[in-house]
Length: 405
Image 1 (tube, rainbow, N blue to C red):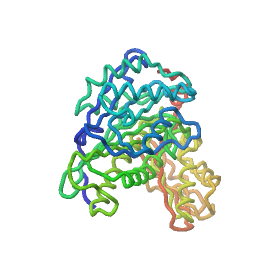
Image 2 (image 1 turned 90 degrees about the vertical axis):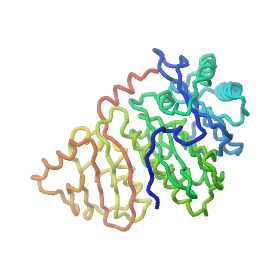
Image 3 (image 1 turned 90 degrees about the horizontal axis):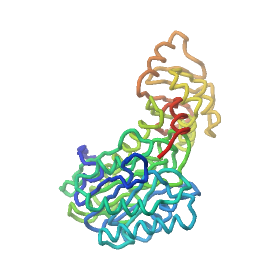
Image 4 (image 1 turned 60 degrees about the vertical axis):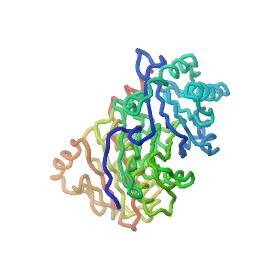
């Protein structure tokens, strides 16, 4: 497999893309709240969306347009208002937003995708949306990825950007992206928006398969609080600006391209967790030795989303009892007398018994670190799974008690 080169530029690192972010007045105090990503040529587009049965108007519109296969020229994103649970008016407003963008860019309305994030249940302020379009179109720049990444933030404290370069048929091809998310983060499409671009030419079905695989190994491997949004969206655009033949699954460099997309998605997903609302620790949960990969997944998710476990991490308490308890109710096959639990390789629970109490200071030292790995071996088979999560502090409660746009 090729070595990837990390490059600057985020979502506009790939050739043929421009982006911008502005303040449209949706949020208070003049904060950035409106972003646009544009491909200079029609791009093949793939999408993965929330599995929540309650879906925001933008998700419905994006699903329809991605499935239609017309491709994409632009993605417009507003923050501060989710345009979810807003009835038929919400879908009309999403379509009107696309029309405004199409008019500003001079492109087909059907090639404009719309995303929203923020408070649920409030009608989209279309006068401010129109203002945003007027401001953002002339601000579009090939190096505008950073400001666009800022404009899509809600309770995020930092922007999330990442990009890599890979060789395809001897040509330099780039894959870049941006994401937002800090709270309401739960696997099976975590609560966030993510936009990935590439200047490779890729067939539509192959691109969709690539994105689905990448999401399963990245955004579906994270959790902050177990709450799932109705607006989750990941879009992947491929505009072919790098030149070369169209990539398909049988191409000799297809694995390298897939690796590049997965790397970008995984890095963005990890950055979402590290910026989890009120989080002070980033934790990798590894489960191995399960009867199957499915069982390992059940156990890893139960641990990663347990608030009892997460609050013990915040308090610096290597409470293996809460971990084994989560495994026990996860639905995975388990025998308590053979389970091992370790923090950064330091065993806390072995073959169904706690280690000597004298090791407690060493375990507590591990939990004082800003990042560590919790490994659980069920000793029942070859199944394995990983999750990325964080601790839970009192700041999480404060943020979600006082959140305002």
